[in-house]
Image (cartoon, rainbow, N blue to C red; front, side, top):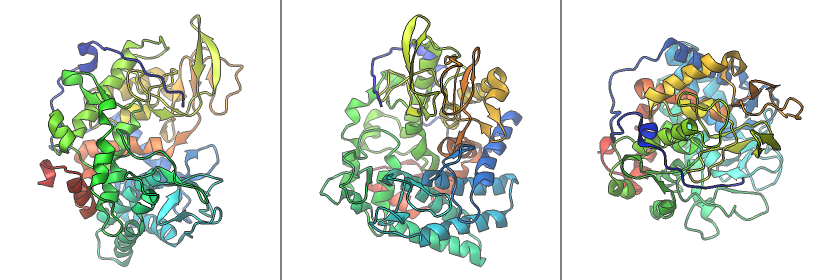
Length: 473
């Protein structure tokens, strides 16, 4: 990805939009979301419930474009099914049976070092796998982070299905077995101190490690917390050692920056970081939840200021993250030549890994609902009011849209282009649907957090990383 960085100083009134008080969103009574937001949740749930392959529990990376399964999408789905139970969208028995099918598949799927015909190796799984057979898709990597997302869903299922019937007992057994099989030290097998992002059969580990600040916090926490193949506590020091390059802002806007919003969301979906701090955040004076809240406001502030002059940006319609785009095109726009992109990680140019080509993704804002509901809910309403049926269909919001891309003659891979209203994605992506649904459940009543706080491995991983305070006490 073409990484561009520059400093952007936003006015405090744009960035703050209200008080930023560390720990201000403490647990409280069940929150009620507006009716239109509940409709978004229900439609988003249906993506997982209706596109899953019920023979094996595999969930597509995207829909309706046919393709492969994303193991991360499965992790989101395993967490989504119990939400459907509690909201009355499916029965507990049906959710139990589908969860059991999924866990049985991953437990029994072939593992080995061969480049073809396997689903994973060393207890980990390939990033993308065949929707029918589960075999590795083409030459994708054995993924530490995507397996982490899958395992988070697995561990959540093990907490939620706490009944005495044979099916729920088997879910708990398989959940523990799948997590305990993962050999985290395989990703440090060449002597490195940090965890590699992946591995390809017949090759070395991927050079890039889970260090710095991004979505990878939960990779390190699960790896340290493993009861069977844990990595040393010093792994967290490797993670935080690059933090100085990520700090942005000052005073109440100071935060660890990362351009795409998913980096501030993914770990927080399953781990409740409110009120707990490691050594770095104790020194900073706020927790990682507050950090994500500030990053959410920074993302909105960039779009509201709109220094690149894109169409459709405002303080109500905003949100940059990894998502689909219209494609790789260099086109004139308002008297300048601008570069557009296909799938890419987008974010404010003021943040590390920033990239802005005018593409907005609803998941960027809606996946931040617990951090800043006072700006996320109005964004969701504005997306519906201003763009309506162009971006909102049977499974909720499509992945992304770009009001500035109006070239109707361009050869687009996915989605229509309107000469006045721009491009809109055709597809839904599982890894972008998941944060919308799961974070709404956390905002409403801590649905995911409350259960994951009971997972011994997460408590152990956090404590080894030096976290103290809050619910860990």
